[in-house]
Image: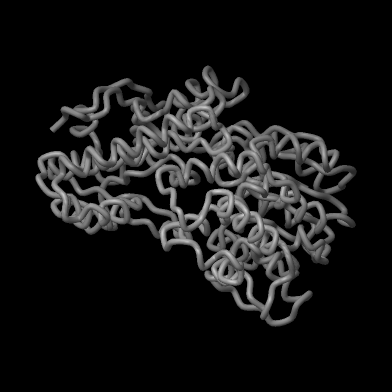
Length: 503
């Protein structure tokens, strides 16, 4: 078996942790979960594993079309033609196509559903926009349990969203009814062959559509799965020889967008899987691994041949001096991220903001807010936005369903920072445009949110410790720090201070 695993196309080391995993995959007796810690080479493991059953019809469920395409290309280069690497959206789209024929993906399906509602004409433009945004949010949120929508949470969220925007033309109760009716309509078969992106994953479950069956199913990044994702994987693997679930429960940081925080344990229960550890990191230096071991994962370890590396606590101003091209600066929040970029520019250092392929908000949604105050002075704009922010945050403090308070404060803090040394809002807009253009550079220091840095790595990583919120649970903070710290190949710098006075 080891000869098969050490083929040139994968060229992976087979450790003491790999052997029982490959033994179980080679001669399957049960479904398995591979608890693959950061840098443990899970992608390489999966490519090696499929070589053990090259003639079986195999599905690899992945997040991100680029990741799926890359995996497909690498497996084909191994001479294996029976493996299909697909995203959940791709599988769902196929099920919808089979059920309803030629379908078209559109971004305005929900808009059309809203337009058909008898009360839609009563909504002001801003109310219509907010209602649509909220409908899409609820459909994302409902993936936690797609057939049950928390009506109380929805009502609470709506009342907060529309607070201060009361109109005699339409009552809040009417807006609530519109939203609920549209959510219900969105869970029905598509009209005119039109679906939206959310439908690709949402509708196959809600409508109980037929999904393809495979002899073997791999689930990648299982910790990021929602209950709907889990349903899709389990259905595709219903008659399979084996379901292989790969993930890292410490990297579960996407609950805010619908992921199940306990996805790994729920996968284990629902599939009756046995867990195999893969704790050895081929990425992290010995020093970084020791920190992670002490603080987060007791069995985490670095490969003995990894570099010694270092972990240091430094001041913000030192970070601005030390950081060089190829290094990575990680922040929990956008306001601290943008501040770091500005400070680096002031030091004459090139920096780029890491963005996901799906991230279309280059300006962090700030222009939308500021354009409403375009003719105002900076002082007047800040006063208005602060009053609105205070109202929203005070209303949201006890509402853990959406955890919006931190987001609202975050946007205000970012506006406050950009407003420094300006007299008019138009000057802030110019700053934003300048920032967006400069931060598109291909080279330089990478500045990124922790969420966008997942899967990335750098020799030297600086983590802005002050960017973590006290509003988060200790578990959420630990998971975020684990992801951030394990991006470091050699040296990890824990940065103290927020850069307010660092020039």
